[in-house]
Image (cartoon, rainbow, N blue to C red; front, side, top):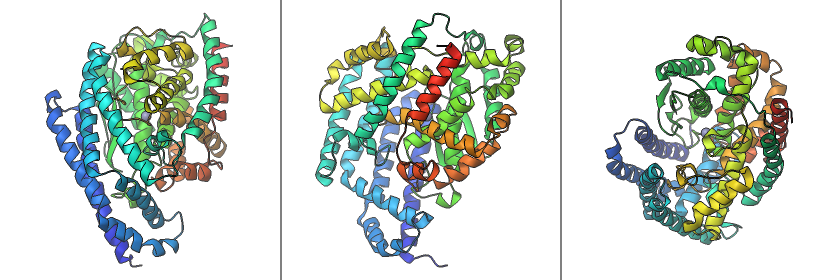
Length: 508
Ligand code: ZN
């Protein structure tokens, strides 16, 4: 079959855009893993320029004409075919990207790089005033971006929806608020019940002296069992773990090691493995297209949280996992049994730091950030008051006193890096992971037994076939509808799972 000549032209153009974006991803990976600190300034320019080239190539009139010429051809294609999806998603991206002038994109990119550096310093010295000017600048630029979208899309109901759409296509803040209110209503009393239970769970097993080289070998061995291969993956240390990819066969995941605490490297690796597996599983037919990624950030996070929590913090995994720990640290784990390690990795309770939070309080950390972002953009919380507003909500939802801003409002990189509208996708990822899990456990009745035996291929294959291979072809709602049968986020499976787990572990 011959390809429609305009489709071929479009694919060639998108291939080049994808090449630039892949190079950008590599620069970003390098910046966050091995780049010498003082390379930051020039790197910011390199990345802004490549971003500009990619934006200009993508938003050129030629892309628009090709899309227009292909409209009739598209109507003759099946909705879920690769070609129809490519044209549809490209059109959506194109119409959005056209709204943001190149200069504003460059300003945002530079402000984000400067903000990142300011954040590093502010956090090191626990001094919010070092970050505040950068935040003022970013929020001002974001308001300019929002105003342009408002003008182009009069149907938008809420400024915040424009921020959300970059990470979760089509999602509205009314929907987020509905889901988060239900989650909050169910979670706050559970947190209170854990606080009232003085016995708690003993997690001393995962604390001790764990030489980093041995940890590295351990988490690599586990990642390899999950599906990591040297041919297509890398695992490197970093301060703030992330996953990225330069192609479906070039997956970079990162983790961090604490000599006295096993969880960050272990669960961080499983988490980032979930992200990496998603990108690795995208159909190779979608390579060098804008479809070579996940459906949305929430879908991406549903995959990482599934491997981290539903597998890694599940009871069956420890049948396979405990012997791995015993082999790596025979003295420390010599007498441990599976129940003890299962309990130790499932310690619940309010804490200061989001990335170290348990499965229950994690969502409250996110809800706090979501509510603050809404208040920042509505003007209800001036940026000068952000630390106080943060501390007040930590007290209200988690009953926690924040001792300093480094452990409070400065703990996360996102805002300094210009990422607003991103945080909600983390908790929505937890919501989606449980919606999917209900479906998966029905489709794979032997899953627990397989996981207990360290057999992860059935789950990997199911995810690949039902979710990963589609890449970005479908919106999150379309993908949910295809996989789960309902097109909206439903927090109920997550609430039931958390309630059940807390009751089982804490007997409350
Ligand atoms: Zn993640």
